[in-house]
Length: 204
Image (cartoon, rainbow, N blue to C red; front, top):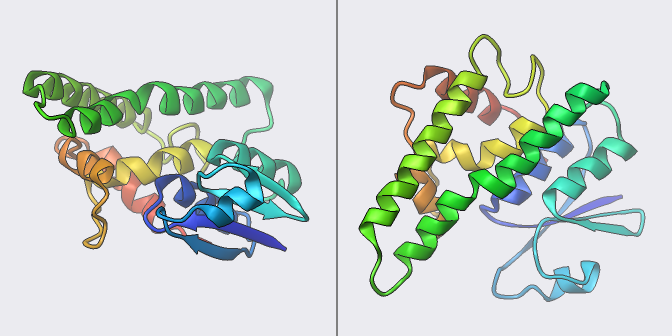
């Protein structure tokens, strides 16, 4: 039995939902409200989602969950078998969460301040657009971000980059509003096609 604790519109939870479906795994979905994290804290000892519980073991954090699923359920793979290719994927995963996320998080913080620095917001927005150009280049001549098949890189990036095209009317998260406002697909046809391609995948 696999149980996934998640929150609606959670980008990190969507990473895991995509991975579960890719591997053909069924999971009981436990939807929590951000205002009450008691259940997640009881299961995992911390309050963030996603949390995956399998055979009495609770794993939290989307990257850790993806690696757990790969170890326990290697088919269909999301990590390449070769050490060099896997190292390249690891570099991408670390870059995305430790570098790419800096700009949108900083914009959200700036906009939430009493006197937002519009110049700083514009500078950070420029960083986000330069990163989109990198994704466009990564997708030149291939369908996925790291190689010719779907990997964890696509699942990690998609829930954030999708806001360049996709918006949920009920989603009022301020961070997601930043992603929608400061990302554009203009002049990035490969990225637009990739977003459509990954968005068509099933979710658990």
